[in-house]
Amino acid sequence: MTTNAGQPQTSPRRRTPAGAAVLREDVTEAIRAAVFEELAAVGYARMSIEGIARRAGVGKTAVYRRWRSKLHLVLDVVSAVAVMGLPTPNTGSLEGDLRMLYEVTSRALRHPVVSQIIPDLQAEAARNPEIAEALQKALEQGQEGVASKILIGAERRGELRTGFDDELALDLVSGPLYWRMVVARSPKLPKGYLDALARSTTQALKAL
Image (cartoon, rainbow, N blue to C red):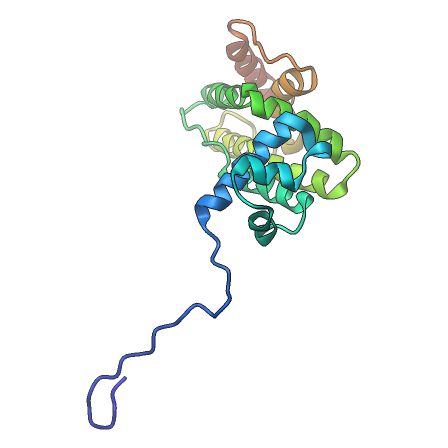
């Protein structure tokens, strides 16, 4: 913009409104990390904003500036983890992709914090529809989202027939490992288990 005299006129610099809260990202991440640790330590029912703040090394006000309740904090953290997602394998074969997916997933599920949090949130989901919806969305955006990409790639390569039952296929891909490690709580896998699971799942998928 120029003035009538032809001299350039600079635009006024925008200022943060007086009194507006500036939320530091490092504090936000510290609180999110504290949520995982607190969930693993005491569970959702006993978890409190006070405990989260103490573990994060911040005041309760810092938590309430970002989330209005414990429920909304947990829902946000679950959603954030879902967005992070898992890497999509690209080995060139269905069995190879499944083997890599199972390796990454099993490592994540063996993590002591994760192994404590998932069963606890599942129990809460049976009583709280908002948590149930968040967990379902996290599952769809997480492992099932990656599994869908693996199946689409296999279909394009001709390893799976066109028009296979995608819902049944997703159950075959995700169900066995999740059942063993989360539901049955058997995190220690026998030698060669993931290889056999990837091979058997591939054969079952090709039979659809």
